Image (cartoon, rainbow, N blue to C red; front, side, top):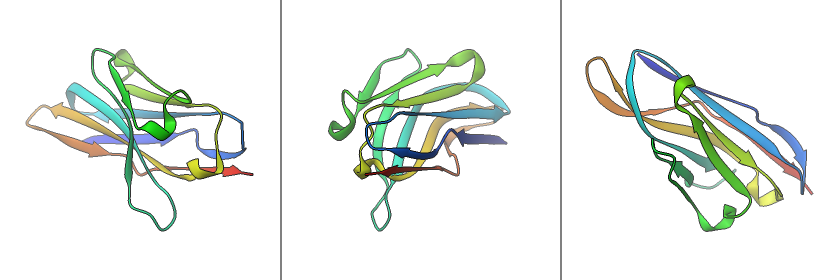
Amino acid sequence: QVQLVESGGGLVQAGGSLRLSCAASGSIYKIGAMGWYRQAPGKQREWVATIRSGGRTNYTDPVKGRFTASRDNAKNTVYLQMDSLEPEDTAVYYCKAEVTDLFSGGDYWGKGALVTVSS
């Protein structure tokens, strides 16, 4: 089995910063793309950022220039550095990873980390 666990969420004032981490563990053979999604209260889950195994990144427009995704392949961990946070960034943040384990491959999700940005 594969598990993803997010950490680093919390309460921050507008303009502040937070860094989320997501560590994958279990019977992992290879991890491909890793991504971040978020779900604000009353809204659907939306994509935030993707970082591929080689380090190439993509971001949704609202976070470009403020959020930075990175990964440590040796630790099977992905990070999301969030700067210049805005109240509109308040959401539960989920990580997703394309994982090939010993038997098959698929997408795995973490349980989420709450980020609250106060005005």
